[in-house]
Length: 276
Image 1 (cartoon, rainbow, N blue to C red):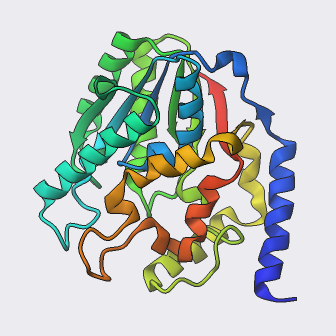
Image 2: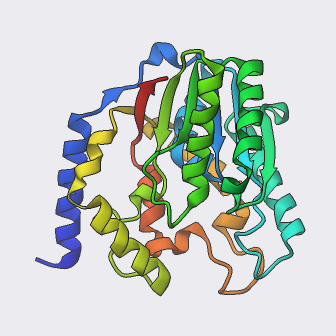
């Protein structure tokens, strides 16, 4: 049996186990108001773009908050101020593709990779938008995302949870996984980028044996709107295509030869769900 076939078999086993623990998102809740907190421009689409599309179709009032400014992803190839504008424009375009208006998008603008350093101010901003919008649901990154790879994800979740302590109104929280998927068997162990290979190996050790699959209890079927989710992600052009002809311009398709990206276009989006 080849390594590839072993990975496929283990993936099937993981998916079977995962589905056993998942309840369907209640369709009667699709029209409930929500705020999606996204660490970076694209996480909102990858992690919960499908359910956002469905909620907007059901008439839900949804606000999308981007925590950071998008200034770092390709700073070695393009000036940071230019990159900030490009990625902000892409975020707005993606929101519109999901059915939102420009006014539904909020840009906090904290420096990418430095969100931790602005914890108190970020908490105050989150409290303000919670009080203004009074959402019934909140979408945030999975609280056990790997800290080393993307600390903005973890601190987005920490900041929102800190704000909820002051908000003191009950909401339903849905945590969406992003970098959780970057481990075997979802992706191969070897990547052409050695740094990513080391990350994959470390994540496989941390998340291996499927033990953390138990964290996820809720899912939304998105098989019927995958085309729209693809179109929405395509609006993040700087992450999906090379804006300049340089092989150093990395895209999401470059991560584990496209296998990482495939994880977000399965027929179901999964969430860790609980009341706060």
